[in-house]
Length: 61
Image (cartoon, rainbow, N blue to C red; front, side, top):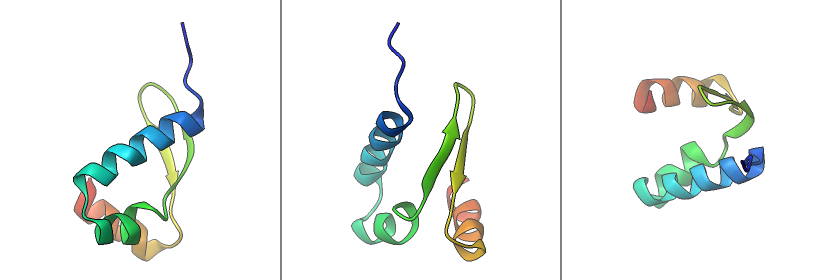
C-alpha cells in the first residue's frame, strides 16, 4: 500500500482547485493557504490572517 506524502496530497488538491476556481479567486483566497496536517478524515489548514479565514469559512465551507 502506497502512502501519499503531505506535499503530494496538497499539490493534487491545489491542482484540482485550480480547475474549479477562477485565476483571481485561486490567487487571492486559495494560494495563501498552507496544509499543516491531514489524515483520512480531515485536514488542518493555516491561513495568513483572520480576514482570509472568515472569508473562506463563509464562502467555501
